[in-house]
Image 1 (tube, rainbow, N blue to C red):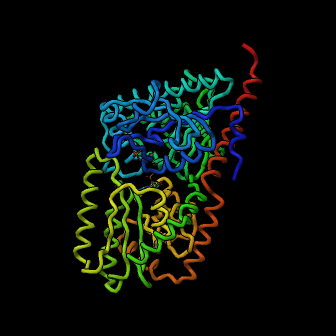
Image 2 (image 1 turned 30 degrees about the horizontal axis):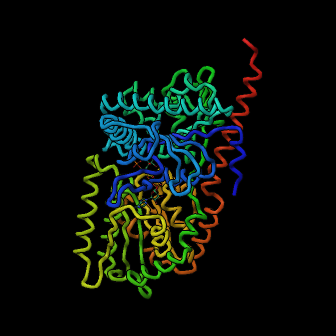
Image 3 (image 1 turned 120 degrees about the vertical axis):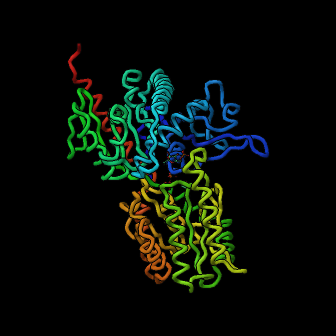
Length: 502
Ligand code: ADP
Ligand code: F6P
């Protein structure tokens, strides 16, 4: 386990993301706490537990105000606190304009290159700017507190919700080191150019406010540098060293593929309760030599869900011998349901699953078992462990942590990962059966190939993927970023020291 704390000895980590790690809601039994699904929270909560920093985020839960102090602060995780959460409040108009509007109807589809879902409204952009300013103020106040305690702040911004914050912090927190991780793909220039020119330029300049800007893959980093080279006339872009200089300020661009807490997933899968559940799942859905497939995602149009259902339908139609011999557990949690394309997709998923089950099901067999809700991590780990194949069919995906969670939980090494070639994970990990979700015949053939794969080949591929994953955990990711940020911080203070007194 890398020693992460040494990078933060005399520094304070201030993390900013839109989504909070713990949300309090009014439930049936009073106030309940839940962890929102999504790669960002899954990846960052374990890292914050190790680094004891402060996390600034939107307080989105219905009972969030009651569970925080007057400044919106509380200690988390609630049952074993190790770090602080600073909640920032948004009203309905903020949520519509900033979160549902510019972030999720403009930047999200553009970055995933699914431009049919791209919607731009000037009022959303205005609200996005305004909300970015408010979050920048909250972060600056935390940076000041750290400084008053004698510690330099290392501000770590997350994702596309805050493209403007780094630049906004330059005047308000001039001594803070500011870096940002972009969790989703970054598109090539022709796609980003679909934004109005002033908005497009503001997004790029906002990101250039960072001292270090981090992407999952070389391709996303290259796309960002190409956008800057084409559109920011005063920027000097050094593609080889991955640096951009604008006036006095330099932004270093780095590649850091995100991962998961591998030991935690493995130990969840190994718990006695999980072993019992694996036995139950197999007895119920895949007795004898029958097989069990699984997929897990937020219902999002980037995940290739209709494409996956079409491939399964084609498979059972072209290979009737697989009926009753291959059952699929489909874990799909509603997400961003206030947006029309997401709501429509939720309805489509439910009706398509019902149609497939009606077409192929028998009195003794349901082809697709739909679990239409958020599932706790222990149950997820048992489902991953029980499966013979896992389908990840994203049309575009920054990394895709589900692929890595499946690998971590495959204790018996029986499972095959069928993985879209358009995920960051496919660029990083060797050993999956790669598919193109836009090609339904090829996708169905990939599933057939996985189901027919001999035991020895499955074991070899999975053991190989597990070895790769063990060398690249969330803590390795964190260490790589903190060590790069730390050395840039040291360099920067040396340069400052060298500057002649004015
Ligand atoms: P994204 O960040 O786009 O949601 P990822 O695959 O990177 O995609 O991460 C998704 C995370 O959310 C994973 O940690 C996964 O376990 C979790 N998740 C997705 N769907 C569910 C669900 N139905 N129940 C619980 N967790 C889920
Ligand atoms: O990983 C990409 C991401 O957008 C995260 O920023 C986010 O937390 C997750 O997907 C889930 O989306 P949302 O926060 O909109 O529910």
